[in-house]
Image (cartoon, rainbow, N blue to C red; front, side):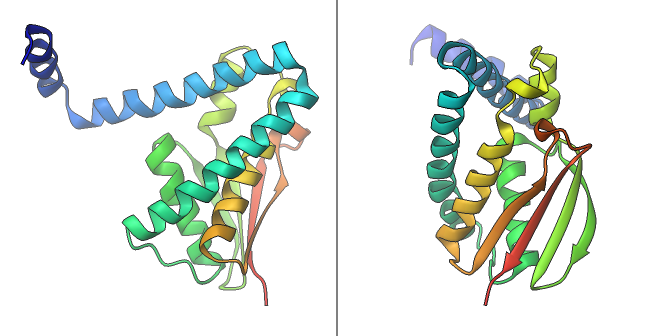
Amino acid sequence: MSKSDELTEAIMKKIPDEIKWKAAYESYVGSVCGYDLTMAAVLGMDKWTEIHDNLWGEGGKFTYPQVKEGFNVPCTNAIEAATLAAVVSNLGHGPRYEWEVIEETPKRAVYRFTKCPWWDTYLAFGGKPENIVCAGGHERFVGDGLKAVNPKLKHTLTKALPRGDPYCEACYELED
């Protein structure tokens, strides 16, 4: 083991897991938000939105089955779909979402997000609502991810802060 490896290991052992976890998800969300704002400025919003949403859709197709199988998360109805989405979100972005339950049945579940790490970070980076692309990425990541684990599940972002709504609202449905 190199001296650098030894020093790194000694330092990392001193950092509590909760602090490491927080640093990891804040770094991830911050990096992605900075990347998004830069790419939108370079490519223009229309082109970047198209690329961004497709990237997140593909990510959802990979991530949702991994988390569902890896942690044995059931996903047979709307409530379980929302639960899987919450587990995926907490693993990737930390426990920084807050929401209210608007409706919750096995066929349909609606949640209103009152706190979102993506929105808060975009704004902290100086993003303006018209330059924030999170809504389409959210819809594709969750929607494509859920379809990958259960084709009868549907996800729609019915309200979104970047679209001018006062909050984001997600609807999970089990189709017949």
